[in-house]
Image (cartoon, rainbow, N blue to C red):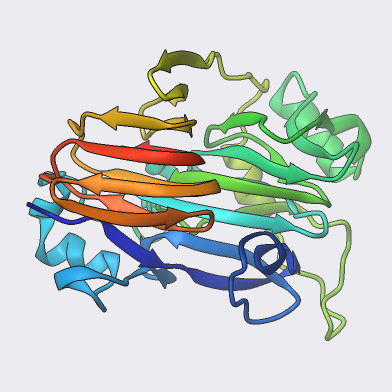
Amino acid sequence: MNQPLFLQPVFQERIWGGTALKDLFGYDIPSKHTGECWAISGHPNGQSVVKNGPFRGKNVGELWEQHRELFGNHPSPVFPLLTKILDANADLSVQVHPDDEYAKQYENGELGKTECWYILDCKENAEIVFGHHAKTKEELVSLIENGEWNRLLKRIPVKPGDFFYVPSGTIHALCEGTIVLETQQSSDTTYRLYDYDRKDQNGNTRELHVDKAIDVIAVPHKSSSFEPVIEKREGGTITTFVKGKYFTVYKWEIKEKTDFTHDKQFLLISIIQGDGKLTVGEETYKIKKGDHLIMPSGTGDFTIEGMLEAIVSHP
């Protein structure tokens, strides 16, 4: 029987990052400008490493190449998903991601990037940029060329517990004071459209990718039609936020003890609140806020006991 794979995250410094990853989760972060925790990742730009069991010390990409049976022999050439926690201590650039077809052609075969956000925490009156007001491509280009960002960009207020599905082609930006768990396709391709004319510590502005962004922005903006589905069960609640082409994402709220049937190729689990015990067969593992793990294929059914919340996904 396969064991759960507990992972060591990778941290990425960003101009907009802060210290929330340390303050909220106790992570050992590299600096006061740590923007991203790559919690469950097989992407070459930041690989999570297994902390336990027979695969200890191996990274997720190696396991995907050498032990595909752990993932139900999933056919993707690369580990398909990436779980991150983002600390938007300052506004992120206004950006957009390409779809698979465009990324394959223009980004050396990289995957496109459809993603989703669960708002873990945010300051009062926090907001995000999500979508735009242009009705046609011509209007979009005109507003961008004239720098009429207030007329172009849609802003939406957010609060802890909100969920947003962000398909490729969507203009978006996390804004200051927002902590988010992101589930996305395993891609590191971002086209920056606007960066508030910010300069880095060396006095340089960040690179923009306006032409590619205009190529891939969906016009007009369409909001996704996913409605959360809530299932009450003994000892907890399962909320299904999205069942899409690339991933399904749930929130598990465990109040006492809940049994789970493991019938997926594999599950990605991030504990975002509380602590408890995970029992798989004869083995019991402690789990707590800030832990990230993969439940591989063949672990069989399992039980979680305690008071905790988790964000869970699978392809």
